[in-house]
Image (cartoon, rainbow, N blue to C red):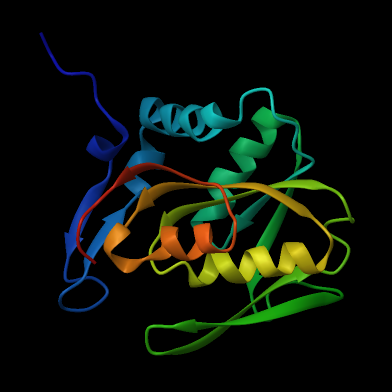
Length: 179
């Protein structure tokens, strides 16, 4: 009797990428497999069955792939949170810390209206910096964040604890030890 594949079975690990000592969790292999991709979308939605969302926010860049599919399933709008300078028109920005430096993400200033119910989606939760910046952008626009959903959690890097300390409901499909 063969074991039913789990989400983590579809994710490959690339050693020493993007630099030495990093175990990169590559979800593109999950996206490439129709069964795995459908399973991931279904499982991302499962904890929110029956919950109404107005918008799904996808964090750059793999969060766009997931967020679009999740928004479609929820019959909700999709909002990209992008790196600085990638969105046309009026935007609001949020700066956050990276391991070695800073980054800025942006969202259109009219992407979310006050009171809209929002699900934040991305592929991986590491330190939580990008997700925290996305949360702050949504909150500045008056959105109500109902949850944050990820494919992979890297618990040792503290992202889940960081988001939960902000009062966020965090859902991840699998976890990997290490960085």
